[in-house]
Image (cartoon, rainbow over all chains, first blue to last red; front, side, top):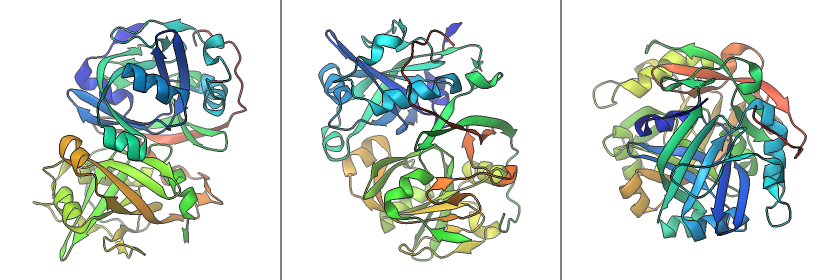
Amino acid sequence: MRIEVPLPKAYRLLNHGPVTLVTSCHQERMNVMAASWAMPVDFDPPKVALVIDAQTLTRELVDASGEFALNIPTLALASTVLALGSASGRTVDKWAHLSKIAAQRIQAPLIDACVAWLECRVLPEREIERRHDLFVAEVVAASADDRVFREGRWVFGEQELHTIHYMAGGRFHATGQAIDADAALTPIGRA
Amino acid sequence: MRIEVPLPKAYRLLNHGPVTLVTSCHQERMNVMAASWAMPVDFDPPKVALVIDAQTLTRELVDASGEFALNIPTLALASTVLALGSASGRTVDKWAHLSKIAAQRIQAPLIDACVAWLECRVLPEREIERRHDLFVAEVVAASADDRVFREGRWVFGEQELHTIHYMAGGRFHATGQAIDADAALTPIGRA
């Protein structure tokens, strides 16, 4: 079930560095692209940073609408993520095979098969957009699938629903084993 | 063994979103802090973005020196990472228990017990530093431990040497199982 995530905890959806799918829309045009280069930059109000290459259709739609969503996919979607990251929305209708759900606060649709969603409005930072393709945006709504995110934290069960991290060359790694650490500054040598 | 990573492949050390340890130094003063909010923003020359809170000693040292290093720790260091992220270098000598190695291109030392290192020089972007504590830097040297990074890719073996991703509340997740995907845009419903 899709549940609301309180905005001050929205950063937790993205804090571990999973690959994302960026959805965007302006008037009748929509697109989706894969992006590993997304991260939180603030807690409350939550903000994110995202790199959007200047040549992409997503850039055109985000520039025109001032909005995008970060959708967090799972291991079951690895091949889809790779495909969405390899083709351009200018030549392929990437939405043809994806089920949409409506966002709460923005026009861009969300991808139903993902497990977490951050709806974002761009904060105008024209200089870094131009020089580094880097966008800063405020998260205006956040939600997650309660099979894997409950009470403000990820709780992974079956392998197919784990989030994934992109390396290069078609290789992903699943988000793996949980480790609960106690802070300890003890002498450490070389591992 | 620590091996050089060619600069156009340096982004691969950070692409999967692991937690990092940021080392910094100015004249006689040195510090290290934990940071999850670091990501690549360009391939060649490689650039990274990093959030450095305005109140931290690291911010003071990075502002003064224009340099920092991103050190990538392993599961064996989870408790250390948590401790380094919980205390301020203004009150604790965080280096007291860490073995240093010399960087190649910057003054800040590297942490010997980590498995990858990106040496960075800040690109002045004063407006986003001030508004969002967000820094953009060029990677001027990169290296990795060849037990886990070889021929341009991560190859994880024993669990202790896996990189880790930070969630919240002391919880990390190891970088898990590798998945080699073939791009495929087939109809997908809800997972």
